[in-house]
Length: 263
Image (cartoon, rainbow, N blue to C red):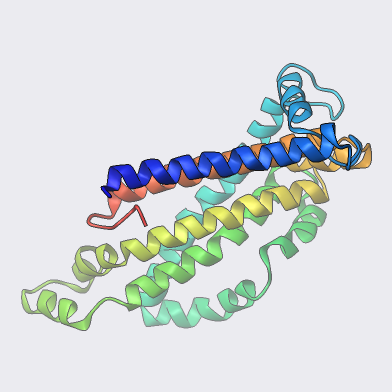
């Protein structure tokens, strides 16, 4: 079987499994009424609610686009900051021993605390708003960025550094010409893991305290028994996360040469 035929087969099986899931979902809700609409909304009801929320703010005070943009804006801001700070910090901790000695005690302390645990403290310090959520996301995403960048630099082979030194490369040249290119696969893996951590953190922060966003929408509708809006929010969270992950994968294909991305 060729790769093209194998891919078609997998896509067909995936579509079939999704169809079976939707049929079972519809069966236990609208057909057999095992679950009431106040407990589990049917697929048809979820689709209708999604299109309704595109143009209406009820019952949570915002359209679905407004909530998605609010969540994306905060999540991407915190994620970008985690990349800007975390990757260089991990690289320099691995490359320069004094930086490692200075930063490691603080980093080990931060690393031991789950990212979501920072949300209540940030809300107390900075209030319910953009900054508190962005800082929470930054801390959650920074940890995997630092760990993977650090590990990638440390895995640079001594023989490669020795060859570069033999040809007269300075320590800075060895870092940028040998160590960082070697560490790129690990760095990109850290960026992927950080994205997942950031996305979970924004939803959790919005669930705890917020005035907008997908997590806020879910929390508001939980209290008024609107499972259809809750499921719409969950699906939007999954779709946005998958889209951003795909975009990161496309960037990785451009940056990391010779890596198998189909695995």
